[in-house]
Length: 269
Ligand code: NAD
Image (cartoon, rainbow, N blue to C red; front, side, top):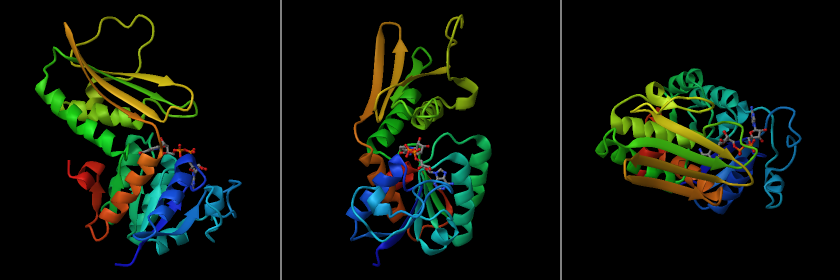
């Protein structure tokens, strides 16, 4: 089979550069064919390989994604919510596989992406690591087995430049816990606490956010009852797990019917 033609949007970002290196490293199954950055970025016009620290690849970073979505079989997108929605429209037009890692999306963005997924295969995950997807499955199971005697709290820590909170992964773990309890996260989530909050309400799912240093991503789901506590956790020590994890669904989605897929679908959990 021909190598999958992959495009990377946001190629100068922390994840974008990692993805450029990952796609190059998997050269027998996929091939980097183009890269973009936000208009006005200093990276536009530069070589994507040089930006990623692996030497020139002859792929010049463009500001306009239209051509990239027309040429690529799959585009991997770890950018920003508004950019990702605009990219999903191009993916729908070009029938391009769209792999979305961007977090911090609101309900209005979700609706646009669901619309685009009527026309092409979109794989979206708040976290592309295999380990986090495993703890999502374990969290759902634990929440279904442990009743409301067990209070659910989710603690996350990330690097100081992270702009959204709680992390997309923490919210996805909250979704898993809520699904296990057969409730909607939006009805039970307590996303922050400050001041005189009153006692904890039974059945809620609480979040706590820590920021600092260069932490790639730590998540713990705590089930706390009187006299005992269960913790399900994951610690990421390298962003490479996300890059490797994002190339895998691009290959998996080849030939798949249009639809919105999750990493759980890809991994078969
Ligand atoms: P970053 O700020 O380093 O990179 C984002 C890049 O996107 C920047 O270079 C920015 O210029 C670029 N960009 C913004 N708008 C653009 C546009 N319209 N066209 C092209 N490029 C554009 O951030 P990061 O740490 O790489 O993270 C990016 C996103 O990925 C965040 O939402 C983060 O939470 C998420 N993330 C997800 C996972 C996962 O596994 N799903 C893992 C890590 C990070």
